[in-house]
Image (cartoon, rainbow, N blue to C red):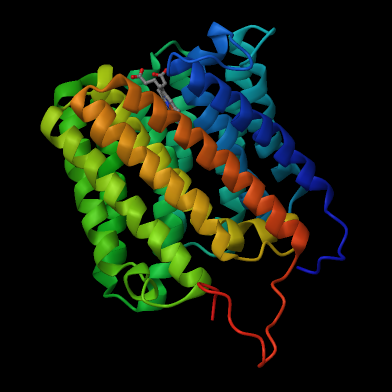
Length: 375
Ligand code: HEM
């Protein structure tokens, strides 16, 4: 399946709208930072959040799930999420794009239904709950709820999706049965907290902070990443990205627990991107070499150069959040934000380059090992 000579499957075309959504989202990010951007359109700036969450990451999640479901209709989910994201940018009415996102998110739940009928499991249930958050966020946005109030729901979509996938891997470490129950219970806790946050923000956001901190504590305690970070090559790269991601989630949880609703200002910028860049994008970088080959039907070999965008993402996020947002240094927010943009673009270049170059050539015994190469 993962032979470089295999023709690229047709569904790969669905990565195009998702990729364009990323580029437009990055353009919008520069506008939100108050900087110049190739397309300086206020509407792009306004839709940055839902475009990134549902149009870009949502397309990746749905495509991976649809390919695994092996049903032609399932591809309608990533198609609608990607095209819906692009439709947000104009000239159609905003509701056209929002409607497509609602339909794409609803279909994602149906796609999970295929997997559920094959093998129901707690880990899958957590991912389904994530998709339900995605649908709820899309519906509420269409109904006119402002984006800052939707952050717990939007974050629930991506955080629970990743957590569910990690829960599958926790089984490798053979943890006690209580761990699965704890993660599932905390995921339900997220659903309760994000609902309460819409109705009674003071209680809901504080509860969300507590749930998130407890979730991170369980995951960080039992995740195989704690062991594999002492390994080499891809497992170590993935583990480093995971553990860094958990640290950012803990920061977000602590801010929500202490401050309650965070709906604007520096803390809003910080906590949002602790979750979406520090955790979600770090996880995407970590999992790209294992998830994308299943979608592309060709290898995306790990190469040590993949550390460059990962390190740049975390370093520039530290600058943005700890120096810029926490101390009110606007220029650090801007420099860090531009660094975040460069890190994401660099990762795309590195990933495409690695896929094009193909498998890493096996070393002969006489060749010295390149520094930092996988074992
Ligand atoms: C790559 C670099 C990125 C930069 C420089 C950036 C920048 C920004 C800025 C400046 C804001 C406004 C914050 C405020 O109002 O205080 C914002 C909002 C937001 N961002 Fe990002 N962002 C980036 C990536 C992402 C990604 C990858 C996601 C999701 C996967 C995301 C999700 C959001 C959300 C949900 C909002 C709230 C939007 C709203 O209130 O309308 N961002 N971003």
